[in-house]
Amino acid sequence: MLCGGSRVLQHLSDHHQQTPIGLGLGFCGAKIVQLSSFFLRPSSQAIANGHFSHRLHHWMISSSGFHCRNFGDIPVLHTCFSQREDDHEVPPEGLSPVSGGIVALGKFDALHIGHRELAIQASRIGTPYLLSFVGMAEVLGWAPRAPIVAKCDRKRVLTSWASYCGNRAPVEYEIEFASVRHLTPRQFVEKLSKELRVCGVVAGENYRFGYRASGDATELVRLCEEYGIGAYIINSVMDKIQDSGKRDSGDSKDRGQVSSTRVRQALAVGDMRYVSELLGRAHRLILQVRTRDMPSERRISVPRSSILNLPPGNGIYKSCLLLVGDEPSIPCSVVVDTLDIHVETEELPLCNSDWAQEFRLLSVEFG
Image (tube, rainbow, N blue to C red; front, side, top):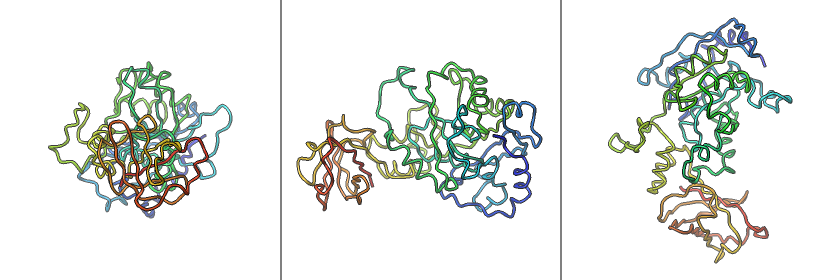
């Protein structure tokens, strides 16, 4: 796919007449701090890679100097490199599924508001993707731990981001970590350019990549320019809920930004309001329930081995919602203890549901 330079030129001449799309918590939460160099005339390397890059001027926008009311002063980038809606289809055989797209780079375990901001910025430039690595814990020998978002629930979360991303839900593309673990920063960018054939990447200011995390955001910009793809670096989304006295997460990389570590810590102490602020949505726990897990028509009790993602810490949680397939949500309370998860409905019995199957997946949202 070739990224059309004429569309960028037309866009730059018209951008002051455009009305920015309101992104709510999105664009205001983090700001673009640097855009890599682009060339209005395609370089020979860019042509060889099958896509162009375009030179816009460097922008350095400080957190204090940028406000939503000044958004119109900044060219809106959501049309640059963008594909038409009918272009978002299965690529021809032999092409990467993310070919021509804009990939957000990071560890997307929690899918929190910082991750959502990366997707928002990717969507403003082109077709958004999340580039995720699987099998990292196994390769690095980390102790197994439950995911924050159940594997089967990730698509629902990404779909919910569509309203922030120009009505385009970002698509997750997974790469086996073992296949890229030993790549140098240059080799990794070369893979993005020549194998995956992406048009651009978006990453946070603290992003590290390459073998033993030897590359940083500055090197990412430099290498992407060399390989003819765009690199967009954004400020971290900061945690504005916790005051500075509560920000010690024990993580040496923690500078007060929203992070998966903070989500896990908030879940551990059962602070579900804080969890919701970090995620930008209610935390949803997925339960694998069998008929025998229902001692009464208003109660479900499942062992921890039957939950598919991380529950909150032990305690009693009121004002929750039980979701059974496409049926209306049912108000409930939840008790989490050392061995089991207990769900009790407050009004409606559960016997209306179809329990003929050996087991069903149920969801509990913590209010």
